[in-house]
Image 1 (cartoon, rainbow, N blue to C red):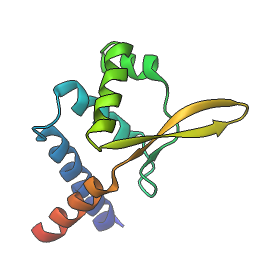
Image 2 (cartoon, helix red, strand yellow; image 1 turned 135 degrees about the vertical axis):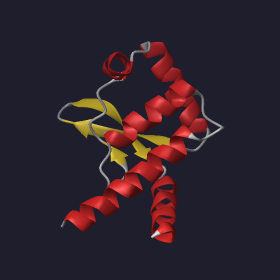
Image 3 (cartoon, rainbow, N blue to C red; image 1 turned 45 degrees about the horizontal axis):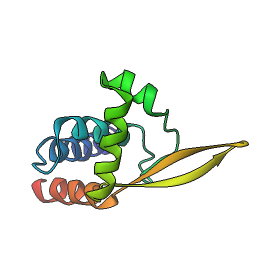
Length: 113
């Protein structure tokens, strides 16, 4: 079981490293995208429990306006897709993350071991 956990940790580190090294992303975009990956379901790449711009902004130490702008730019750049989800009677956004990022991290990890 420890070897599986170590494998998953290496994949996660590759994913985060590729986000940190992405020249096409600003620093705030990188922080928002990393946080969304932390909050996502690894099987679906869905961020179903998105806390809202205000909470995410507070957690990251940036303004809600900047979070909103980062999410729009990440969407335009193909890193995520907003999808509607019904939670009870209220509707709130969810985000589908680009699974190719996770697949690339997996492939890089597999090649290096």
